[in-house]
Amino acid sequence: MDAHPVWQKSSFSGADEGNNCVELAPVPGAVLLRESDDPGVIVRTTPTALRAFLQAIRVGRFDAVR
Image 1 (cartoon, rainbow, N blue to C red):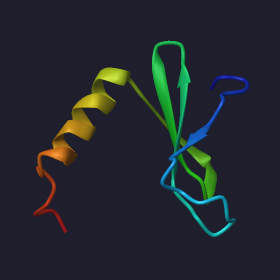
Image 2 (image 1 turned 135 degrees about the horizontal axis):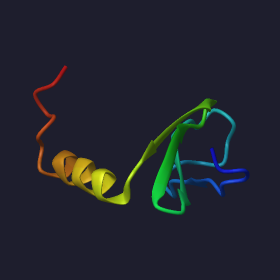
Image 3 (image 1 turned 60 degrees about the horizontal axis):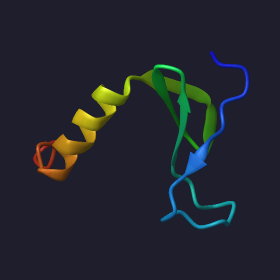
Image 4 (image 1 turned 90 degrees about the vertical axis):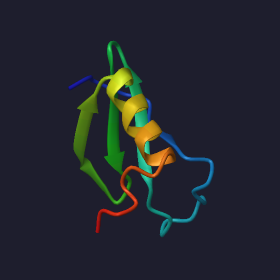
């Protein structure tokens, strides 16, 4: 894992301690994701895969998944 990734929290998330959200950190050749309330669990993906996942969310591909 990269030594000191710079994590970015969504602008939609408040500054309060109770506002948990997904945080992203760009690293060479990849993007790291973590849940702010469980920062020890980090998922590594590629920018291309993340872009495809977000596009699928936007078009409603997961709306029926429960």
